[in-house]
Length: 545
Image 1 (cartoon, one colour):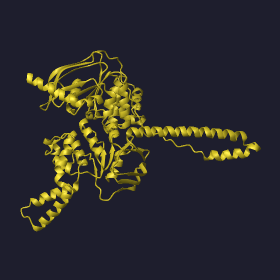
Image 2: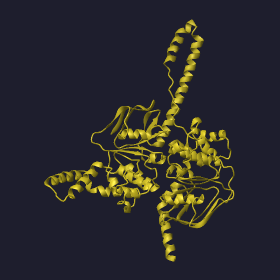
Image 3: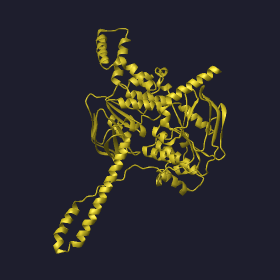
Image 4: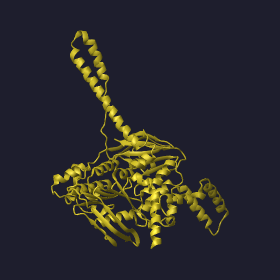
C-alpha cells in the first residue's frame, strides 16, 4: 500500500497539487489521468521519492519494494542487457555481484566463506537462482530476442532500450509498480503481452498512459487529476468517462431544480412579504431560500484541440499504385516486392512489429528515400501531407510558431495562421514561442496544424499519437474518422486503429505484406490463421522456384 497524505507541491507561486489525500491499495491497478500539464508524471515522481513535496508526505507499507519505469535511455549503456533487467531488484543484484567478487578471489579466507554463506542464504530466499531465467522471460515477452540478452545496452536501438527498461521495472515482482507511459514505442505484440502481465499482476500498479484501450484493459480504478486535486473512481477509463459525465449532468440537473425552487420562493416573497396574513409564510420561505446552495461546477481543466482536415480538392479514383517496392537498410531487407493499390475510400492502418519497414515505406512514398527496386505512382488528383515519426530536424529552425506555420500556409496572413494555431491550443502569446523550446505534445500539434493548413486529400501519419495527451488523441481520432480523403497511418493505439481504419496492412519481418479489407479487431481475431497461411504460401512459392 502507498498513500499521499496532505500532499502539496508548489512550483514558484503555482500550486500543482494542493492537500492531496489518496490511498493506493494492493491488488488494484490505478490509471492516473489528467490534462496535459496537470502533473501526472510529477505525481509519480513524488510517489517514487524522486521529487520532494512542499507539504505532506508519502507513506508506504514497511518492507515493501517500489519499482518505477526509468526514462533515461542512456543510464545503463555500459551494462549488459540481462544485468540491466536484474538491477530492477537492486538488493538481489548487489548480492549476485558481491558473491561473484568473493568467489573470484584467489585467497579465499574463512571470513569470505562466512560472508558467502550469508549471501547464499539471502539469495535463495529471494529466488535468486531463477533471476536470470525470469529476466530472460520478461525480455522475450516484450520482444527482445535471446541473442540480444548478452549485448550491452549501448548496442541496442531506442525502442529496444525502452523494452529493457520496462522489463527492469517489472522484474522481481515489486510490491508497488509505477509506470509512466509504458506503451510508448512498444509494438502491438509487446503491448498485448504487457496487458496480460499487468492483468495477472497481484500487487499495486499506478500507470500513466494515453492509450485508452490499454487503460480499459488493465485498470480497476481511475485517479483523475484536475485543478490540483485527485479524485478516485472505481472502474476502467470508459467507466470513469461515463461516470464523470453523468456526475456533471446530475449536478447541472440538481442546480436547475434548485434554481427553479429559488425563483419560486423569490416570487412568493416578493408578492407576499408586505401582506400581513402571509408575512409568516414569507419569512419561512426566506429562511428556506437562504439554505439553498447551488453545487459548484468547475469547468474541467481539460482542453480539446479542434482538428478538422478539409481537403481543398475531391480525390479521384486513381490514388496510389505501388508495384514491387523493395528496399534494404544497412544490409537488411525491410521491404520485399510490395505491391498494392489504394482506393479513394481507403483508410489504411499499417500494423505489426516491423517499425523500420513502415517508416521506410512512408519515406519512399513521400520521396525522402529511393527504393532499391519497384515503383509507385500517385494519382493526378492527389495531394499529400505527411506526419513523420522523427520530426526533430523540423524544429531546429530559429522561428516562432507563427512564422514557422506561415511558411507552409497558402495564405500568408498572420490572422489566418493564428486562427489555425488558436484551434490547436496555441492562443495569443503562445504564437510567438520559439519552435526550438516546444514540448513533444506541442510539436505534434504544430505538425497537425501544418497538415490541416495544407488542405491535402491524402494524409500519411507515422505514429502521430506519440507525445499527445488523451484529449488531443481523442480530437485527432475524431478528426480522422470525419476526414473525407485517403488515409495511410501507423499507430500503437488500439482504439485509434480500430475506430479509424477500414483496411489493415502488416509488413512482416521478412519485408512482405499481408493486406486485408477489415477492421483491426477482426484482423487480430484471424491474425494467427493469416500468418500461418502466408508462411505456407511463401514456402510453396520457394519450393516451386
